[in-house]
Length: 122
Image 1 (spheres, rainbow, N blue to C red):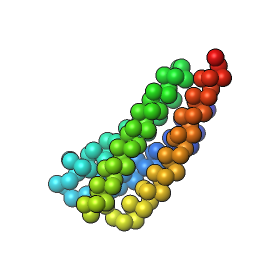
Image 2 (cartoon, one colour):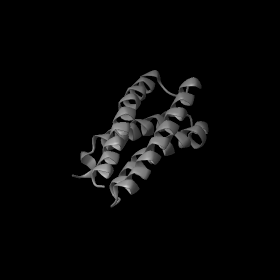
Image 3 (cartoon, one colour):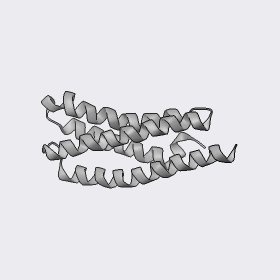
Image 4 (cartoon, rainbow, N blue to C red):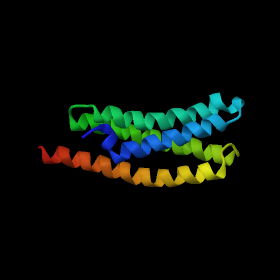
């Protein structure tokens, strides 16, 4: 199986794409503060999934998937602040909210399945 075949990874990459669109639409004075934090956290989510996927041992992989979950929640935080401050269009906010809801469940299920494989190999 390739990394690109993981549904959780492809959803994370979709969120990155939308985050980039949001970032480009921000006024320049907000790009290098809240915008960069938002972008970094979304990119970190998918990057941690990729790094975990490339690890040899399941438990080593799980650490990165937990990091991905932390970055995911950070991304949600920054997106909510963008919304509260009127810096994101309503349509992008709704699109991200929908993706976040799906992704959060998929990521937790993915982590559980990897941990189950660890237990099954003992």
